[in-house]
Figure 1 (cartoon, chains in turn orange, red):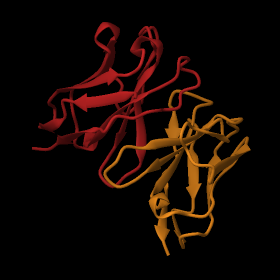
Figure 2 (figure 1 turned 30 degrees about the horizontal axis):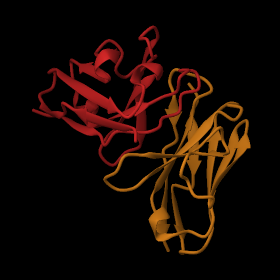
Figure 3 (figure 1 turned 90 degrees about the vertical axis):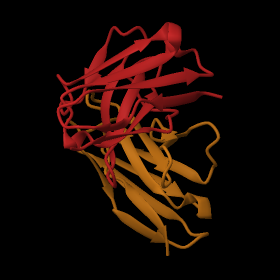
Figure 4 (figure 1 turned 180 degrees about the vertical axis):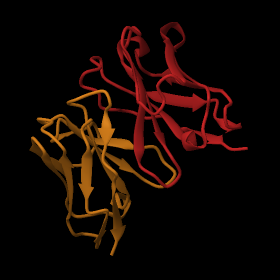
Length: 108
Length: 121
């Protein structure tokens, strides 16, 4: 089973700044990685797949990068609606399809 | 617009059973793999089960294998999760989520709003 590890657990950022979230896989997953955003009381929403491809309707301030075992989600010019929990998920080796434990982006 | 609506959650005693349903609309349901993902209160996301478009391939997390059964009815645009021998640790919001045409490249989009299953005496 591939273990996904996200860091940090919590990221305190001021609106207008940039947030950088990390996700590490326990073995290479090529670029078979997705990122999701989840706000309180809501279902997760797909942001990124293929490590760097924005899903339909996702603003350009969200960008993904990385390959192999190291991945990054960057949120530029943070808006108030971006404060949420973010999860990465690998779909290279399955089952199981595995998620990271999440990074909470909170207002500083 | 693609919509997935779960139903069937509720309070059940340990050892009991429950059947969840997920109704899809706005999509050609029969073309996609479908999935169940759960989230325990205050916790992260855990993949539970996946089923390919024609039900030929079915997968379960080890934590539910032998207790949960996933199925689908493409004529009714519906996905199901039959849960039995329920345990307290199965308490979670259960989401259904659309996968891909090809179950191999299985990211999840979109997700339903979820249905809460509480296992408690």
